[in-house]
Image (cartoon, rainbow, N blue to C red; front, side):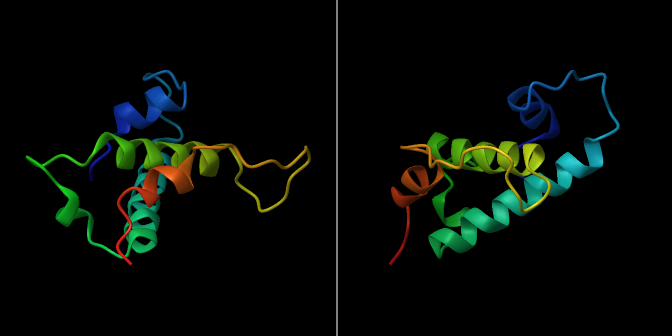
Length: 97
């Protein structure tokens, strides 16, 4: 995993002492890595430099994790709007066509 539980919880503004969702968050990290890899059409290992992914890819994964954590169901009760320069932009920088 490129994102550890502590980083994901920090991004989600979850206190490190709150452990009830830890397994769920770990699953979200795995899902985010898979989604980004498939969206880029490239294995994440190919993007590594010194064992690390580019910061834009990490941020894209954190955005996915945050979205999946906050929106656990495929419905919306508010106004739907795309956030500019978010996930799609970040991964487009590395996509293989």
